[in-house]
Length: 127
Image (cartoon, rainbow, N blue to C red; front, side, top):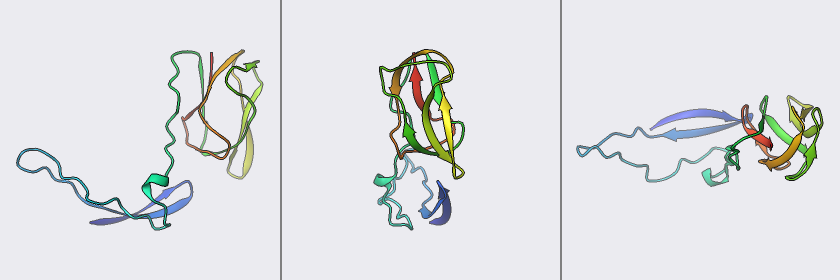
């Protein structure tokens, strides 16, 4: 086992990783237990930052930098105008507005207030 110190959203976690080797039949061995995180957080409590809706068209509004969602100002079905503030997120101890790039209708809001966001996460979709 090798120990690593991993930083996620400015929190550090100590994890142990076991090397996985293929057996003679080509199947891989699996871990028997999940790694224990130093902060007491279990792997099931870590929230995925993957988008909740997969848009087929329209404008995908993505996170320009990592941070957390402070306030959501729109809901699915709302009509928005170009330049209208859609949500406010906090990054580097500053509040930042995320605005609409075009007129349209909100088809999906993939985050809730308080969610951690990473660069490139699809936050809102406009048709």
